[in-house]
Image 1 (cartoon, rainbow, N blue to C red):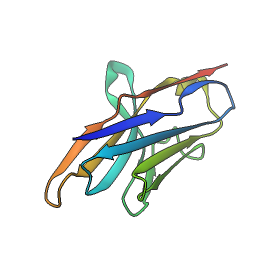
Image 2: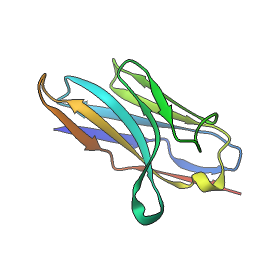
Image 3: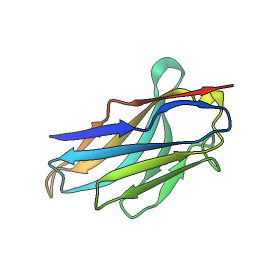
Image 4: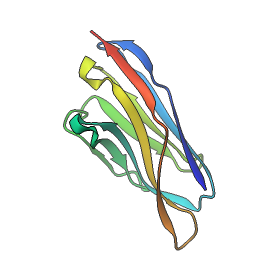
Length: 120
């Protein structure tokens, strides 16, 4: 089994910064794509940023230029540096990962979320 544990959320004023972390532990051969999500209207997952094993990144339009996703493959950790935060960034942010639990089995896992609150 694999656990994803997010941390780093909190309360910050508009214009401030937060750095979210997601640490993966358990039976891990390697981690493929890691994503940060937050709920969208209707509670559908809204992709904020993704990063592949080799470091290729993708961002939602709302995150481009403000957020940076990075990862440390040796530690099985991913980070989301969030700058110039806006009240509309307020949400619970979830880590999601495609994990090779064996050399032939790829499984998707979710973390429990970390809450980000941005005051105006």
